[in-house]
Length: 459
Image (cartoon, rainbow, N blue to C red; front, side, top):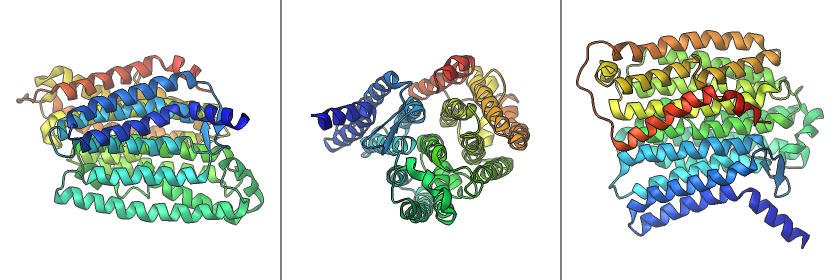
């Protein structure tokens, strides 16, 4: 009887995850029954229900299924960030896939990939790291290849090859952890304190596998081609959901990894610096706005892992991760929504701010939030991240982050300035794109204004 009660408890705690799995299956079934028109509303309802069921879990800090899956601040808040983000990208995808013979499949794949990201963010066992990376990757490969064009096929193949190699390296590295500790539980990583070689080998594998999903330098080579080759909605999705899931998974590992193992926080800080500098410099000369945002997302990944480097050293670490992840999801998806309306090339933005003032204002809000201008959400997120870095004795990292924020302003001004030059005929946003833009603007401003309330609810 006790075992049955324990199973019921565990199933209750992961009910939101189960709902997302069922949502993916139901969307797939809708496609099999040739009822593609039902796939999007069913997906949105499923994601909404899963989000609603997550809210009562806020504040819990426990484990399920013998410690293999964690229900803690990171996994709970990842659901509250990633499920709405998936819903927004599904709405954005509707304008690209409506009426096609694989419409329902796209919504199903988005949901399945989100299940993988949620598995990563709540990983209490190294096998969940492998499962999360595999599930997210397989669905993402198919989504990038969706258009059936040469560009999309080439991008998907590059993504697949790089993903296969990085996933294999991660799995191989994790065998060292299992061999050294005799356990696959992440909570048992403290046993590695006296086994430095095995600890380093496993850590390298994890950084390669999760760094690939997060788009960190030097594991970023797939990012520009995958974003530009696939549908815009898929690019928006890849820039947020797998990235946040991977960074949260890295944070879960960091919570239990002995801090003196190869001084790993310095290594993570080094990846942050490389990602910020490379991403911003590579974005500067781009004339394709999708590729510009792809390189920008690499730089944003660098900011995100400030919080990982500060885990165990600063009380702000987890708060900063959650707030910046929420801000990043809103402003990045919003910016891809703008591209879906305006166009992929920098020249398409000329005069948009004068021809469509509200669309120009939304674009400015998203871009200035990405820079970190107050009082927008990106500013609060970066402020917390820099505070966590300083609190963890990484003041030099915070300084480099601030300098890169200034550099990123030059990147985004390349979009903003032409928008207010001579006006030209501008496209009218469709209903779906308008929904995404309005929701993203509200979240980008709202998270910034309500940051104190949000941080008080994060343990």
